[in-house]
Length: 130
Image 1 (cartoon, rainbow, N blue to C red):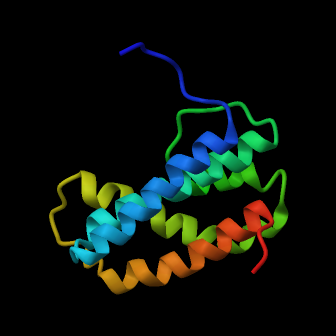
Image 2: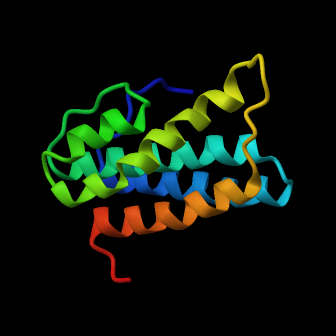
């Protein structure tokens, strides 16, 4: 397999984000909240990168949603209302990938609730009708 860099095309990032979104649903069906949360974080990260690339942002290796949101706010201040979502979902990346001393307490209901807000976030980023 030929080694290449990451795509700079927003549509490529959105396509992979949609795959991650589908994986969230699969993991919810398996009642695996941590894995569903991880894929939700991944989907939002890739949507944010697509949004930023659309605006001429230089691609960075960064995974924290609230940091990406800070960059996105330079292009659209209305995204500020999703800062708590980004902060919360950023933590899901770690809850599935690193051992913790105590259980995360994350539930499938938490993920479903965050998915609803995340859908609104994605609609605002890309100007999709409600």
